[in-house]
Length: 512
Ligand SMILES: [Zn+2]
Image 1 (tube, protein in one colour):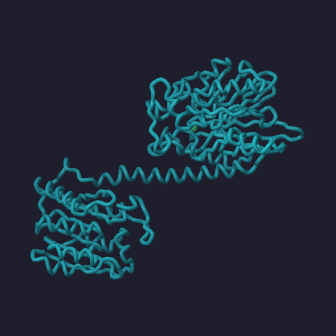
Image 2: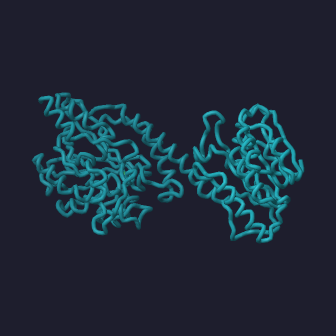
Image 3: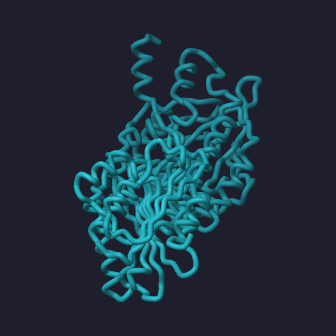
């Protein structure tokens, strides 16, 4: 084969798929506008390789590739009829039938349809393939409802995940064999990616060699939710699947996304005359470890996200539920959370323990109010926003001496502005690591003064924030005031940490 011909083949069969890409995640930045009748047309627009036709070819023995460039379908032939694994998207079925025909086989001889999992990019074509072939569809119980209902389990109402419903004729148990003529293929339950995600294994001979062949379902998280669970038990299913599959060493690994095991390169090597081009006993193990790692990361992130939505939001100001007997503590965080979000880790000061700080501040009779400010929040505007909330409390009847504003760094600067604007000597303030030279000069230059009881806290080694003494001196209506200087050698990093050394005095102020 000429180089030119090889290149054109590379272009034809390259199916680049990342580990995470097995199916339904809408591509970043792309909006899926869904049509009622054929939502899957949108997937084809987003992932053009999924519907791009490629030449079918022999992999080994009686196993053939009949999929598209980006979606794998496999034909296992025998004298007594054929088995077809996976149907791609609904619009792929005619292409698959044409590929079977191009190889010299007949769709009418396909007696059994198998499915790796009930996602429309692998099950969508089955309905039409079943009609065209008259074959029976065999699947695992876990995917039956999704196949027969034409939905994505857990996203039943989301039309973009719909597939043509297809009746399941036989349910296979884990390790159950399906036999057709000389072909024996075994169901391997690998749930998680879907509830009935089924890998299939078979053994074939080529020359003197015998090969264990794996048709891998998937173990990517892709579009699945882990918290709350996409379907009940999904997290345990993934774990069981990794435990089961970690030790697998098939000779030949095949995927419904051909890029997962670099199928195009193998095919080129086969064209070059390498009879073992598809044989690689290590790649499955390597791949499943990566997928397990990715799963752990996604689960970790899901836990963080769950904390964010159900956790931080519980500290939002709730003007529907003001209680006059409660103490109110506003916590205004530092600029790092504006820039890096939460959770985040600062290059120099490490993990920003915002969540833990809020929880420590919330003691006894105190309602803690805090929210993540948007990046680049204007200090004057934000000070007014906080003051509006303070005034709502006061207007509702919360005594001003039950309201405290604790700010850290930029948050302390904002708290200073709240104090200046409120001009209420009953309010209490704690300014942690807030008095940089620039801030102090700005306040003095602009006649910004402190009102109320003000405690300042900083680490002696803080190279950004120093004494607030000059502002104290210029504030004629200042109430109780004190400067607490800690010697923890944490520098400006003090306020990133949920340490009792600064949080307890902030809670107790004006009693120290
Ligand atoms: Zn999938």
